[in-house]
Image (cartoon, rainbow, N blue to C red):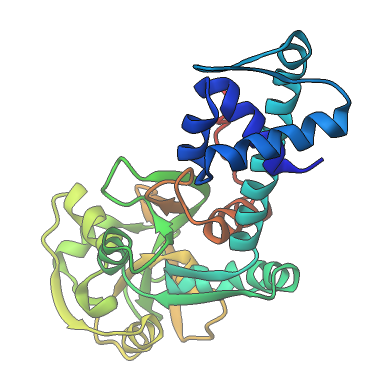
Length: 296
């Protein structure tokens, strides 16, 4: 059935005249009349009663009107779905993330996702929490994998925790302890990765009232760990950073124990681009994270 004829019929009923329907659809009154007449010929019965001051539906027209409207609505739904799918399977997804998550969590997820959606381009920037916050706030990053960002209005999908640890030279007096007392940081030289911009470490020390004596800052976590190994100070960082590095250091959990919650954060899942939404849902499932039900 010709959708244009259906729209001409429904619009004529809604507006009460061919003239008004023509203005809405961009046709002359005669053009609308011809479309409706062609539909009537196809069905074999009249749909409208033509009057000098407009049109009204016949009994048959009244009966068929809601069915025709539903047909038009279905067409709109099909185009809407097609548009969404077109966007879903094409596009860019920019991720800002901790290096530890980029190294140990994302590779398998991205590999499987891009196998399913080869037209979606994934970009990653490994950086600090402060930098991640700026990237997401400015829209330069679509989403983040890190500890929770300060903006409480952002969507937050937690998927794991990461223990905070102390990195000590092996000959350090505390290296044989089961746990490193966080209060001991007051008397230590601290080597701070992320160019001294590690918000998780700073928040931890602030929580315990410790003003750190930062002796050195580095860009890379591995560089910081190697400096610790050479006796230049100690490091405090999340355990995920230390995975896979063979270093001559002692890695101790903290006393009292401390950890950070890791999750996916973005301004809004509901308004995210289709490709971004698809990736977030895919990653959350692979990480065992639960996305809140939006059906209510």
